[in-house]
Amino acid sequence: MSTILHSPEIFKIENRFSSLFERTIKKGLLNIPGPKIKTSVKSAFRSAVFRVQLDKLIDDIYLYSISETDKLISKALSASLQRSPTRHYLSAADTNTQDTPLILTEEAVKQSADLALEVSESIIEMLKDEAIYQEHPSKLAGRILDKWNGEKYRAVRFARTITADIATNTSFHRFQQQGIQEMQIYATIDKRTSPYCRMMHGTVFKTDSPEASKYRTPFHSNCRTAILPVTAFSNIDDSMRYENRDFSKLYGQNFKVLDEGLDSDSVKKIFKDIDKFKEKYSIPKFIFDEDIEKRLMKLGVGVEVRE
Image (tube, rainbow, N blue to C red; front, side):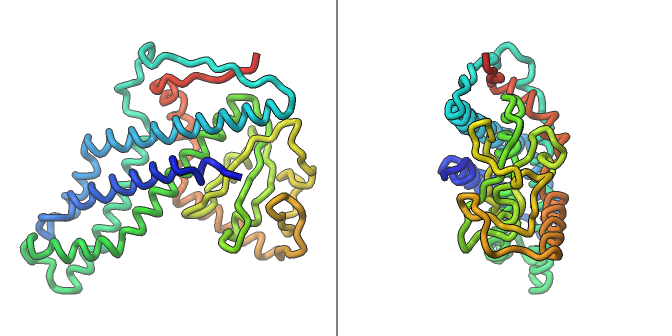
């Protein structure tokens, strides 16, 4: 099954995010004296140019995620013989939010700047170790590029994680808007599947439950596991619902119980690892909640309702 996070469009947005980060950090690193690198990097990531470009990327994640989620919902409702939603759009021209800084953009800027400072500090330490920290910027440039290439994976991982986080939360919010009462975790099961996604695969959550907010994807860096709408037509075994789920049992791709399973210690560790990842990398729910209504108005995207 093709999901939003596996789509070429999301990959393109992630690449644009990574490219924006790379251009900005190079702006702060190159042709700068060693002692001024951190200040320069801070300035680059706090610039209006970076903020505006990052805001546009977030807009594009919202718009694509909403479009694809609405298709999922319409398909699920059509299959269950319910009427598909009727679309009602707001006009962005009728709102006063276009020029208002949005909280999710500010949080994304902060997280980007924090990572950029971590990377620059790592590069500075390596320059000091090589005793070239005080060299002229023109002599530092080549070594800084070499060091950046070794740190670049962190920016790529960050771009993928924050993109997945925003896209999934947008889908989750859209489920709630449309009155979808349950959602299901859907992972691609193969040799590369993480233990977190393998364990959570198939689990059904009530969309208005605190557990749904806590355990929506992503579960780890580079996570591609999706959330799907559950309707009356969906063939759901009651044992797959979170409140009934025995997490020691694993499901195959088509939600059949496998012979292999997990012991209680492994289950506890997986939940603990997911909690740690969420605490460190996920954008707090209150930021999404405050951002999404204003951003949808800014983008001129209204709520679909069933009539």
